[in-house]
Length: 354
Image 1: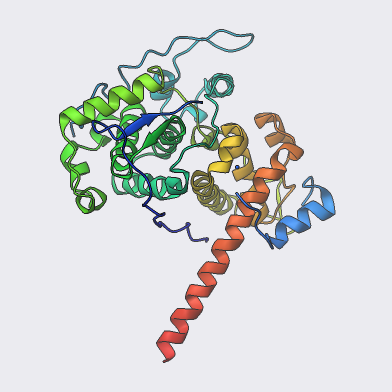
Image 2: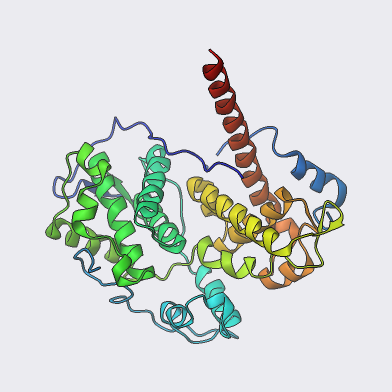
């Protein structure tokens, strides 16, 4: 199984705070190519075009409450409150409303705010995306909370000039808001738990109820009190529900164990989902397309054919050609991680024999 990309810090100098109260200044309203990406990918492209092979921290809102989700009407789109419907369904992709919820999510993503990648702190974005991922893993938050938190941070950084110190507060506030929106109440991190994090103690930062309220208010006003923003994590389970079936072939042969294949494709899809979280260029794609690309990339790595079967084409409404750019980026990252893991393994081997 692949290693997840490692947490690392970006440069943290050269930025200033022009607004002493919050360290945030309002602003007005491009990743390089990799090389040598997966041989599996080259084979698919060259041979068949992909067709064949307890309590919570204080704040302005509580978990799943406080945000007004106005029902939207359009042709064929059901009128429903997404978070409420998902809560009732639990694993909504398994319920009777799955197709309706998916359709509503697809409609919602058409109205997502635009991202321009113009933050002065854009070089720190990877650091704070990793920070959110690490903190969410520590508190065992769901993937949708993690991805929503990073998306909120991206949109906020895109609109404000933020001091380095305050970026830590903003990142944790985004995670707190996202967890209140996506998680059950007893899973939302508490204020004292956030203050005990190493990133807070190292920066000599302490969150108080007052500054948390101020930051939550600023975030919610920025997003017009709407946190119902679909991310790739909101789509992935629905697409994984039919990602593998008994008619698929592995290396051209019938699969021996369908359940084990489902387990592996879920693990790879989760890996690729995290890769997409670390690369802000994926914000140029619709979240549903990113989720579909993660599933297709997982099928390529597992050598399943057809690479993009008709059932997935119909469910996602994405043809192979739309997925190619995203899959390419995901497989480049996978190749880089494999090379890095092999390099580290070689270094460990040399040190053990020395």
